[in-house]
Image (tube, rainbow, N blue to C red; front, side, top):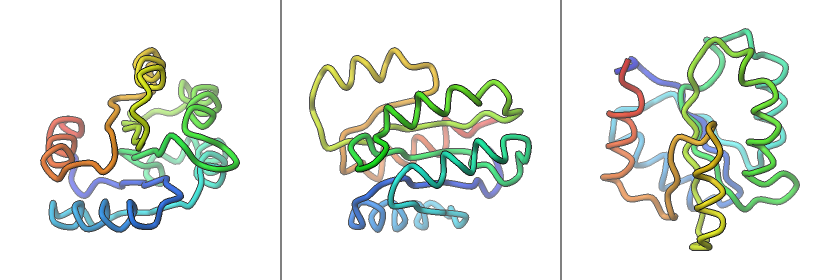
Length: 134
């Protein structure tokens, strides 16, 4: 498992971010950065794609956000993803149970997994142990 992974939480819901941080801290994850929308983290990735130590190991990405939603983030992320010499796991989170969203998310290779919010502690533990193994 990656030692001390860097985790980004991109979500406009403060309660969801709080719960995620709490669960991650319980799993001994201490390097956590959260963002209220996806614009700033996307620009950071685009401008720093070759600084792999500064890029996250995993991103928890909310689907429905103002300005740039999760699918828009993925669309723009995929334009630079091939230049990144690091595997970034992107977990899409949403409160929507819209099957079209789920089906579409499954077609996007950048998305590692998809969960309905709130994510369960057990699911988060599985993600951290399975997805981040190297």
